[in-house]
Length: 66
Image (cartoon, rainbow, N blue to C red; front, side, top):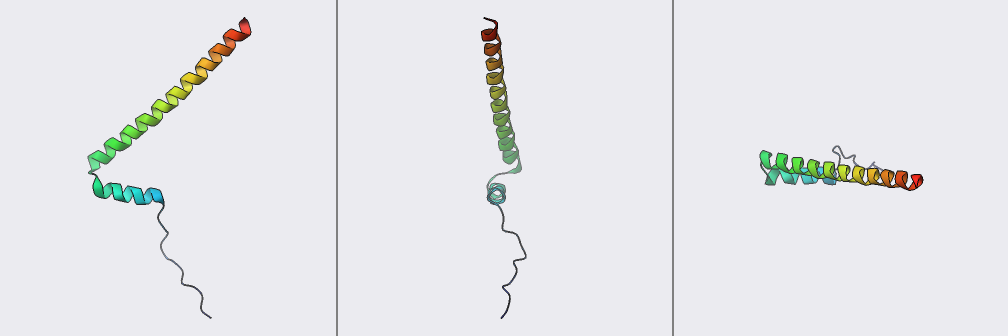
């Protein structure tokens, strides 16, 4: 009985596959612009979360003093 053949290459992840398709469809500048835009979105979300947390702390402080 023979052993099953071993696969020499790893199966690419979904992210790897999407990046490959992206590189075929977009120029380098477009990829950079899209990634920069996504980074900005993530940073905006982080700042919004920080604002909500700060507002909660302020409200709790004001409530405890009343």
